Image (cartoon, rainbow, N blue to C red; front, side, top):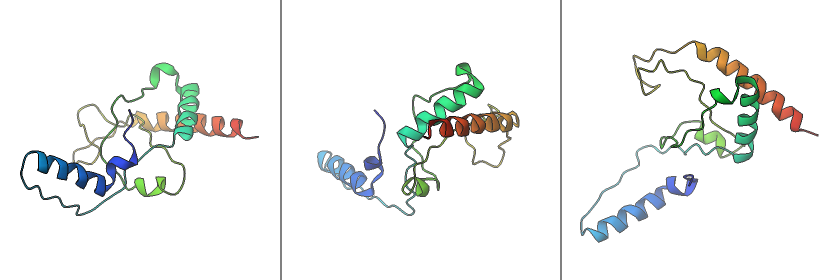
Length: 130
């Protein structure tokens, strides 16, 4: 099952923590110093993206992640206002697991992958419009 926005609601998290606290008869303090909304991909737009990118890159180069990231991103503010979808284009060199580290070294081949993906996505999007 996909993780929906309800899981990222601070009240939902507090309710879960309170239930655990009651069950184990302990006190758990929770703070939310900074809350960025989760990035929840729009299903219709995601389908357009998958089909468009697949046409340009080939099915063998498309990977649907089995487990999504449980992190959040400033991009989450956009998805609350317009249909959005977050994609990855293979920018890691395979040695680093996170983009937000000082020693990240981008694999520049991803630029071509990104451009081809965007071209396929745009073409697919406008081919669907009446």
